[in-house]
Amino acid sequence: AQTAPAYPSDLLALLPDDFAVCIVMHDLRGHSARWEKSDWLKAFRQSSVGKSIFGSPEMEQFTRWQADMKKHLDLDWPTLRDEILGDTFVMAYTPGPKDRPGDEHGLFLLQVRKPERLAKFIDKFNDVQTRSGELKSLTKMTWKNTTYFRRDQEKKTQFYVVKDSLVAITTKEDVIKNLIQGLPDRSADNLWAKRFQRAGAESAFLTMCVNPRILAPEVV
Image 1 (cartoon, rainbow, N blue to C red):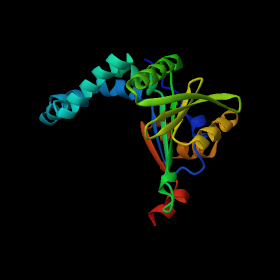
Image 2: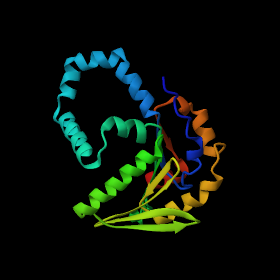
Image 3: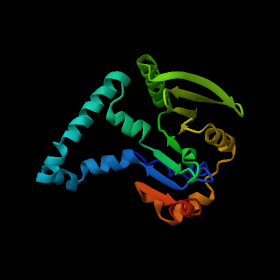
Image 4: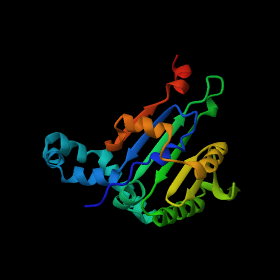
C-alpha cells in the first residue's frame, strides 16, 4: 500500500493574509483507492440511483472530457488524479470590497508527487492553447531570483510559478510575488497549520476554513 502524503502544513504558511475562504483537498489518490474498493460504492453502482447517475448525460460528458484530455494533452484521468491532484490541492479566495468588486482574487496551490509529469502537462497545455489562439502570449518573468510566468488570454491574465513540487496559480501578480517572497521562510509550524491540526483536518479529505476577519464585512 502506498504511504499517504504528509499533511501540507508548510503550504498553509503560503496562504495570503487576506484570504476569506480556503479549501484543502488532501490525499485524493489514497481516498479514491479506498472508495473504489469499498463495498458501499460497489453496492451503490448496482442500485437504481447509482445506475441513473453513472448513466447520466453528465457522466457521458465526463467520459468525453477524459477522451479529449487524452487526445490533446496526453493525460488520462487516473494520471491527473494520482500524479497531479493526488497529494494536496489548496484553493484560497478573497472577494473584492463592495466598492471595488474587481479586486477579488484567488490562489491555487498544488503539491505534486511527480513534478516532471506536471511540467510536461503545463508545456503541453500552453502549446495547445497557443495553437488554438486561446493563449495570446506566455511571458517568462523573474522576481527574487525565482522564475514565474504570465499567461495572457483574450479576457484574462494568469500568473503561475513552479518550484520543485509546488505549483501556484493566481490572477494577480502581487499575489504571486508575495508568495515567492515567502517561499524561503515557509514553515510547517505556522498559525494556520496549528488551527487546521486542532480541527482534526489532517485525517480529512476536504477541509474548508473561513476567515471571519476578512469575510465579515462582506456579509454584513
